[in-house]
Length: 191
Image (tube, rainbow, N blue to C red):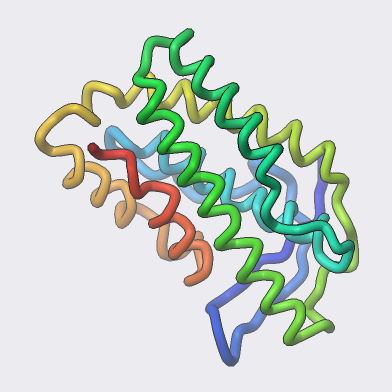
């Protein structure tokens, strides 16, 4: 599936953006390594979907905040966490961070597009299709949380997570807006 997305460089004044069409999974850079590498990679994929969510909502009057949808998603991940054997409260906190990070991206892009209408997306992605993609990423995030649960409990959790955030190409792969969102998204990984 080919989808339109907006890649943003920088934040604030002087922010530059370019439109390009990307294929999900087309990023050819090596993945982040280490115990949190897989989790971080999926979180980054979810952040990039936030660009599509923003493009789907921008100019439609649809709010960035969707408390009913968020409550549904959090209730479902709570159930799923119990099913896969991970702490449901910690899992809900982690997914609250994913939602908050997506809002960071959406608000940043809305501000950019409002200030620079010529940079606004020309294609409005289908929000239903995007939600299907988000659901698939939720499943993968749960799988990654199961995989890292022992590392999360360990004394080196924060060190390993910091390594995942700066290892490899994260700073090349993400602009300032998405780096800020990544910090929000990973805030509760380590207790």
